[in-house]
Image 1 (cartoon, rainbow, N blue to C red):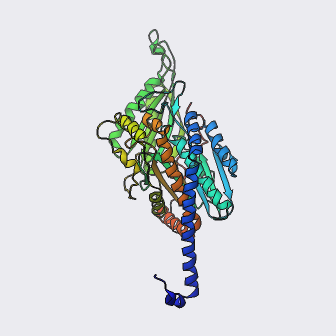
Image 2: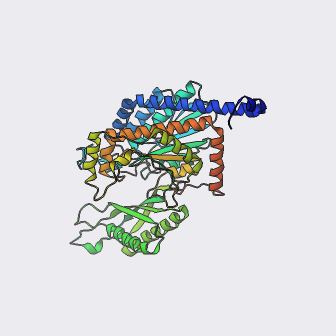
Image 3: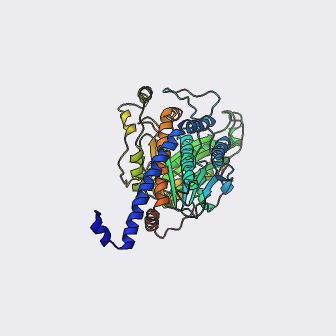
Length: 485
């Protein structure tokens, strides 16, 4: 509406008041956002130092003692109240500031991946004495989320925003399903919206779902014997593992094509001349639909039982993880997209571009243009589920959830690779981390200032969730705190 003196006098008082209030809120929001961007950028070095400490710790799932302590200390130093060891997980925490509604949650991860130690250089070279690496960029993930939480806390403290900000310290995303236990414990019951992000090789808001996932360790028990002198007296647990693997591999022809099944033999015996009396194999089963994951996993269990029967061994299994697909929220995604576009992409220096070019030689032919790191992708809903799984999926079935990724890696870099570890240890990773911290902060500001945005997101959430009653795919088990042992 175009206002002039005549239209002002003709407007009903309530409409005029609402218009003026809306204008004031919009003006305030832009002011808060500009200041937040400047404040976060001013602490670039501090946040880089925090991220690099976690990069160096490189602690695997449920073992992230130093990483969680550092993030908790940063939050505590900035006025947050910390609830430690939540959901029966020693490294999980919830950091809170403020009171009342809305309650906005920001998710923070910090676990590393085993077997991916790597220096921050564009050629493969592990760090002596290091067994793991931040190959999914969770050192950046956790730090950016803490940065966003601190910035929102400042605005609440200054009485520019009202409500509660929480940072959820989420361990063991890589297979341990840490957030599932946090959801199951009711830690998100009073949350209005959850915000997350993930490191990647581009800047985009997430509008593609994830694969539901169920995982377990299958343990076979046999009888040891001398492999040459008395093999007939032995019953090989390793034979049972191999028989199970063969049956599962043959089963691939007879399951939905979208399914993904992966396994590693985590214990295959100790010496070739001893019939192994114990062997273990670790399985993941993934599918876009959670109900299909359960059915296919049950068939994998049958293969394990059949393998044990055929080799005269016994088998038991331990559920390690189980995650839902990702329930998307277009209302929230559209808002986050506007904020990501405001922040912009990642701009690399000449030296960083040279680093990237050398790194890209390890990818194979035709890698993406390095300049795409500076571009923000348009928002695009995808019908196809993403190739990975995340325990954010379970959060998304508990509360309206929105996420994004930022270019913390050179374009073309695959996750879970030494190249991702290398990028994450450089300023390239830090720059992407700052894009995420700023975008999440700006999105949270919108949520605090615009109750209608939350209401619309909740309406979409209820409609899309339908009559489904959340139930954790991993059942009522306790967290597998030693699953990386």
